[in-house]
Image 1: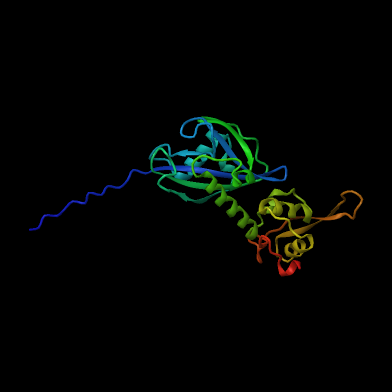
Image 2 (image 1 turned 135 degrees about the vertical axis):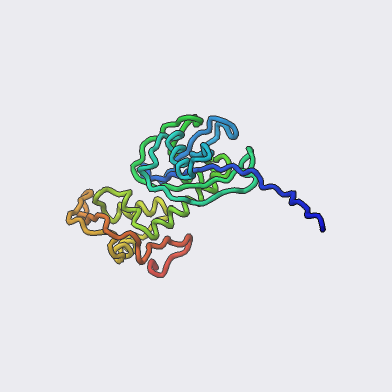
Length: 246
């Protein structure tokens, strides 16, 4: 009877971590929450909040909530947090093979973060500084932020999320500025007004006008019942004028 050779392959040891991308608007600028690492590797560098699972009994989502509270003193149970993706390139972490599950939250009115545990500092940082490389991040966190920003921009196309960043009542101009800030693009006023008005349930008249300066009072609106925008509000293509805007 032929001898059966044993398979010498052994599964690699993979550590599981979580990273959180928390996005908000502050002073009409799109910001991401960053922490200053207080430990190696990358001690003193800025990074996303996150860390390893605590023990075998902790779920990935529970670890994300715990890390957000420990590193930035934010209560994730009050935020809508969704899974962004998994990141596991072999050389992404000098400590070994680390698979990170990234989560995304986009919310208005978030408070100033407070650093804790292994973070030396925590701060809201303009997204553009991260995407441009002017605010370098540890690990592959710039890539994760870029993916999260793209997801956020897509969510504004297909959901009424932008209304959450306005007051209870708002003008079309205020709503447009949310889109311009998140998309990083200037929008034509009249074209934006037409697009918003033709989406059923997106916004509803508030029945009042708001006067700004000496011009005509601006109509005010409130968020409508729609959960999905149909037709969606599509982003303008860079350096290309649409047929509607010509």
